Amino acid sequence: MNTHREQTAFAASGWLLFPMVLAALLLGLGLIVHGALDGSALSGLAGIVLVLTAVFCAAGFFMLQPNEAAVLTLFGAYRGTTRQNGFLWANPLYRKQKISLRVRNLNGEKLKVNDKRGNPVEIAVVIVWRIYDTAQAMFDVDSYETFIRIQSESCVRHTASTYVYDDGEAGELTLRGSGVEVATALARELQERLARAGIGIEEARLAHLAYAPEIAQAMLRRQQAEAVIAARQKIVTGAVGMVDMALRELSEKGVVKLDEERKAAMVSNLLVVLCGESQTQPVLNTGTLYT
Image (cartoon, rainbow, N blue to C red; front, top):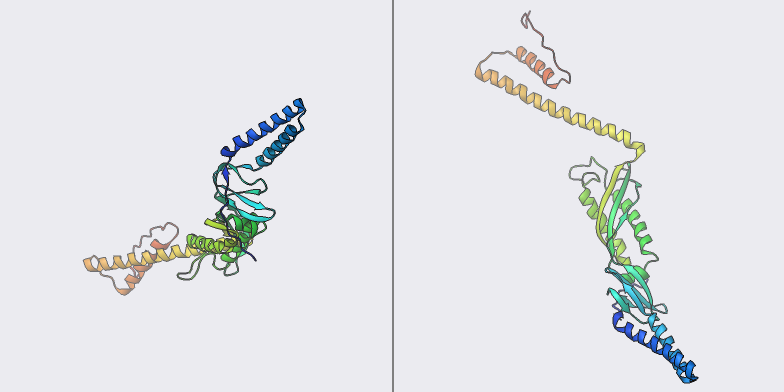
């Protein structure tokens, strides 16, 4: 495939040529009127030639807004691109195709893809892009807007399949926990795919990320169970530390001397109090541990 590269085309200021074209048009009309009144065929013919020339030259005027370019072609051959803005004039035979150079957003649709473990997830991205090479965008792809939409969808599917949704191994990047890294990888791959169309990626970020509906409830229960287990682990760790501190303080300060059986009973009671979900009720023991 032939790859085009943008070339700069010449476009003159329209304000310099507009008075000349207008003067030629008025002069031609005047000669036509003069020839009709005086019966001079030569004046009439000269007037017609001037009017036709002025009309032909007027077809070369065009306007470009800021951050807008015009791709100029002559009978199918690329002649260059002008990025000047304002009121301009170029060869009237040129075909002038305007193309926007502004930064644009692509709000991707919500896609259902499989992550690295095969779990179905829903993902959507927002891509910020702009055209850098107008020749490639116009001539190397059929429709650059359709091209970026299809390539972005393919890239999102490929990128999502290389990461797990969450709960990865130690040091492993995940879709949910490593959003910046995933977006960077997505932007890099998109840039490689869209470079052939003269499109540059300014930014890519995740706009939506969730488990697919068919497994969302199961994954929610799993996450809730993991949260409960993690909370229990912290509670037990803290309770064991508090019991150890209490026994050590009692022993060091000589508040009470406890044998192993009494220590076991005390540990059991403290763990019940510290780890229990419901509020504990005190029980008064009027006897001893051995009666």
